[in-house]
Image (tube, rainbow, N blue to C red; front, side, top):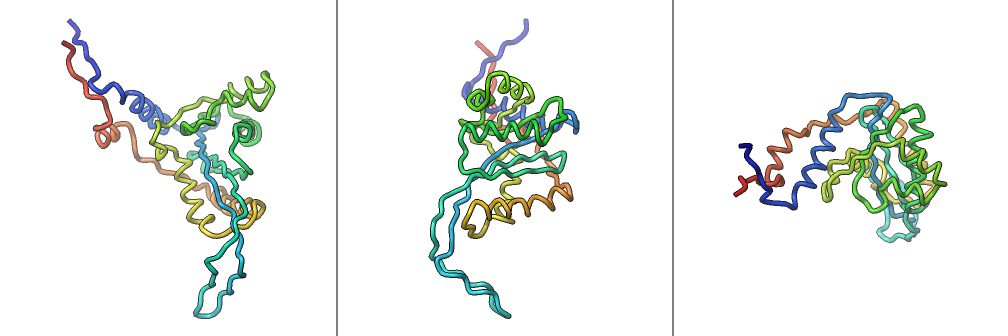
Length: 228
């Protein structure tokens, strides 16, 4: 008789399923007709100097006063295609459902119009759903866009699986770690950052795979035991 098994930890399978799903997607070979794109977002506080910084001089770096003036925040949507060596950052006032829907339309119709299907990896943020397309566009347009995507969500509390988050980290270190006083300046600086990275097709060499997860994250997998 075939042995039956039960789950000793019934709250873990959803996490493991999403984990291995994303890792398997990352191991697919590059297919120009089905590009892999990862999506994430971050916010940037806009601040201005109250006292102009003292300029750099020989033997002395630029001096900046600690006091600053708040000028609101801006949102950055990161689109990153790791196998293509391509990224695009869209700066918006907010990160509403409508903003997200327009980012998806840009991804479909502007950035990858010739793709048969876009394989999209993103986290479980409440706005990261294809159903949001119906909040921004007429039903026919929303359905057309929805059918352009194959979506894979990272597990909850595991956003480190999203390669777009890695690219946002690079953006933060190389471009955003200083004061910017306007959304216009932020947009200009982000564009200047992404252009050379796209020109040299900087990619991610992802090494963490499903067999590695089953070893290094063994504690997160359900423990199986024979059924009585």
